[in-house]
Length: 151
Image (cartoon, rainbow, N blue to C red; front, side, top):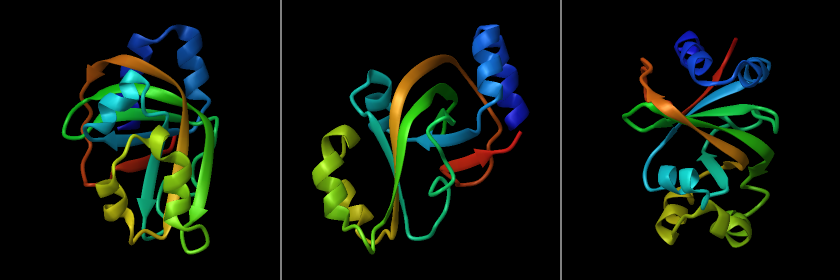
């Protein structure tokens, strides 16, 4: 999967941009609508991942990493750079604190928060710049919506 992604990026990016990306930690993240469109339009400036357990990207992502954007059930269509990340233990920081402070940038509704009520951990990823790509297919197996990729 890593090789498939890099082969496609090499064809689409300038040499300098590609060389820069090769030095970073890469994450593959799956996005569903309407959140995907909100990110691409620049309305959603923070991506969040909530979980019951300490799974990726919780404590596994830093501000210099690259996130490859894959449409749920579809192709890779973009990547973004990260301005900042924040991790929360929701047993210490109530989920409503996050909702009150970041709801607008997250572009989510009350139903979203109801679905996340049982989460124990939250990762907030502040999007710096988004780069749209010519869409391409990769053979991703499994239901994971976030994968930290190794070189």
